[in-house]
Amino acid sequence: MIKGVQLIELPRINDIRGNLSFFENNNQISFDIKRTYWIYDVPGGEARGGHAFKKSHELIVALSGSFNVVLSDGINEVTYNLNRSYNGLYIPNLIWRSLDNFSTNSLALIVSNIEYSSDDYIRNFKDFKTLTIEK
Ligand code: TYD
Image (cartoon, rainbow, N blue to C red; front, side, top):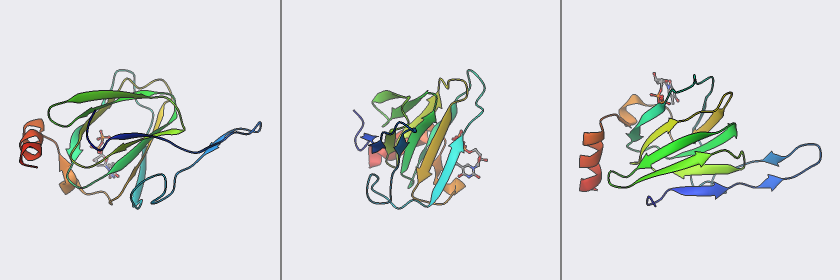
């Protein structure tokens, strides 16, 4: 377990015409969405992430295919395999994350509570550990 991280089951409207899921500001997720981005066309064996955010909270959904999200609080490491488009992984700030093991044609949707800022990144794991110990 990593404090604050939550695997959220999103609403599912099952229909013979095809299923529908959704999330809303301050409803299924606890923050206001300021930014949406997505990761796709990841070549086999590649990894994304490898950093933490100072302020950014995120929700990650595997809209298509599957991938692993490896999380660390500086001490504990937990791996989530996301493979359902009705699950969202909520990651608060100050959690180290890497995404790997992407299946062919997988699509990761990510929403954040802040606009993109390179200043929000902690890219050095040692610096991250120091910060989390101070927390
Ligand atoms: P980065 O967050 O480092 O990718 P990942 O952690 O998924 O491996 O971002 C890669 C590049 O994309 C970097 O140059 C910044 C840019 N970028 C934006 O311009 N806006 C965004 O919202 C994000 C997430 C990245």
